[in-house]
Amino acid sequence: MTKNKKQLKCLFVSSEVVPFAKTGGLADVAGALPAELITLGLDVRVVLPYYRTVHFKLPEDQLTHVTGYNVSLGWRHQYADILYKSTDVPTYFIKNDHYFNRDGLYGYGDDCERFAFFCKVVAELICRIDFVPDIVHCNDWQTGPISLLIKDKYFWDLKYQNIKCVFTIHNMKYQGLFGREVLDFLELNDGYANSDKLEFNGGYSFMKAGLLYADHINTVSPTYMEELKTPTYGCGLDNLLREQLYWKSSGIINGIDTKRYNPKTDPALYYNFDINSLELKEKNKKMFKKQYGLKEDNSMLVSIISRLTDQKGFDLMKHTIFGQWVMDKIMELGIQFVVLGTGDQEYENMFRHFKYLYPDRSLVFLDFNEELAQKIYAASDVFLMPSYFEPCGLGQLMAMRYGAVPIVRQTGGLKDTVIHYNQKTKKGTGFEFVDYAGYWLYKKIEEANNLYHHYPTDFKQIQLNAMSQDFAWEQSAKQYIQMYEMLI
Ligand code: ADP
Image 1 (tube, protein in one colour):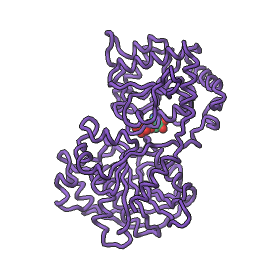
Image 2 (image 1 turned 60 degrees about the horizontal axis):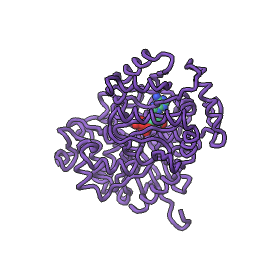
Image 3 (image 1 turned 90 degrees about the vertical axis):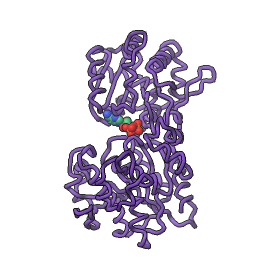
Image 4 (image 1 turned 45 degrees about the vertical axis):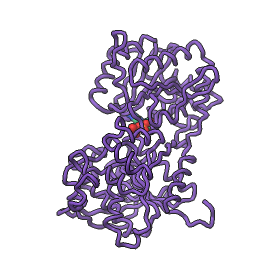
């Protein structure tokens, strides 16, 4: 920012933030983007709920109690304590034990009430603290109604009148669709109950509130925004995005925290390495195989680190080709296989079964373990991300940074970040396929395996190309700043 410009103030609101609470990529973004914006000269503060997991990491006596107030949710009044951490990235924690002192982050029967409470507390926060933002940056459905509250409920307060709201969609599939209680908790009248407002598919949508009331909407990759405007990917809101809201929509690709995720310094690895010492990556693989009991042969190690849900495309492994499961065909190539993930029973059971079928050539960790994830990225030759849809995807970025060659389906952020390798030009950072079919997943693994064994210099070239990509947040953060400046 130039010196004569007023310092731009941003309140960044997210239901999960690294290092306090994480279930997926949203937390990584909320952990890294505000920090980068601060580095680039903005005054940014982050807000998130004070979940039980946050309490363990950051006990109350290490935080400042800034204020506290009641908000009403229809007939019910609930109290919020506002705790504050001023170091690094200044952060507000919304404390209410009834709603947030629980295991996990989401999946409770009263999630509608919990996040309506969160939104109301955040909207009120602006007139309770000494920080009037130029931008309120909301993320995903849990924060959707905040822009509505700012525009329609607080419009009479001068502090709110110049605030612009940005709403970032990290995943359109999760929409916060509930019953009529949405209107009760947010204290909205019947005027909000029609299809021009919050009504959607017979319910009332937090996500739709975010889309309609934000001054600008963005997704975490340009391709995903275009895909959302199609019936295949739009989850029922494609029409709205395509025909009404296109003028205020864009896509900005995510970065990763390249300081934290650096194979040269990452303490989780057996051996640190960089682009000039790829042989040490090989040693990571050897040590990993040894520690976890995989046969120490020269086979290619293929990894998956992911939530195990329909989105991620692992049902392709039980497609049938040539009368066999795709997974069996893949294993016939002689590869070794490691999975780290948690999610739907169906996929957990599928991988348990594959482990049973291939006990000495596969590892299956049905767990969420960040340290192990880093070890696996560093140890594996190939990383699979055959997603049905992918708003941005951080796994493939992480994999490339750690020299694991990504095999991805060409969708969303995967399309925007992975370039298919061309053996003639020696350009490209991985392998891509287009059709959502197990056959193509198999063919791409076969192609990678072929290069790995028969054209090792090409395989190494892909690793080097991938590791040389710049996935740091700086470029993306600059695009966010441009967006903010365009709005104010
Ligand atoms: P999504 O947000 O849809 O889950 P992303 O690829 O955007 O997918 O981000 C997933 C993030 O979570 C990555 O940083 C990945 O390394 C991490 N991750 C996913 N599953 C696990 C797991 N079981 N253990 C540790 N980290 C995981």
